[in-house]
Image (cartoon, rainbow, N blue to C red; front, side, top):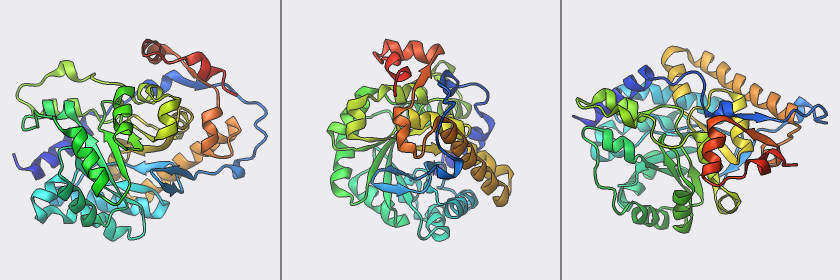
Length: 350
């Protein structure tokens, strides 16, 4: 199957397999602060991630590109990014690196947002030359390298050999002159993986947890022999954030993606250590069904929700969230304790 058709299949099945209702963020709650000693207008949304100073913690995360008909989606996303000063990542550019005729479906992002922060995207199988070409294609400010082992294994035409990934990531980091972010695509990231990445010189990580677009379901929809038993594979976004201990946070900035539904989820992720929060599926559904003006209003609503939560918690800036008491309950708490995380310490923070 041509890569362009695969990209279209991914969008169609991503829209058809929307994860709705409860997720791991519902296992996270806050201790109320009846004396926050702060006003709404005093709250600030700027944050630092991957050496960038971002006006908003929201990042439009990697979604699509690689087919002529995906150009319009990336164009609308780029306009939203430009109008609301959001960093934006494109979907995997491997399609355009193999077929330059679809490069315009990615380049539209830079065309619409010439001064914004744009992140290129390749897989961990990419060579240094491909990584450089992806950055050059977009005049990108940073580069995402995605990890998607389970997706590839379930993909009918996917890769089956993942040897050498860490070495290639390190080679790209040493050779490409923009910040590197290594990201999961929805199966979460364990502390052991984060430590390997840090030891290889990676200082920006997107944990990409389960709870948002489920690429196991997407690929099973595309397969003549679906393996549905793998559709719950991996760690949720909250579980992945809890995997990152103080030592990891001291050496890397963390981004949370997967199942973020509204501004309160953003603040929960920040208080669990995320410096930025990626949104993909929710925005894909928005641009698919709504006008630019309606999408911009939704982003404004998310920013308002973030500031409401910050005000109620007494947070003038997002970086202070790491001191906020957080309660973890339910299945998330059970799994986090099995992984050695002290939840009492989080609940008693001051």
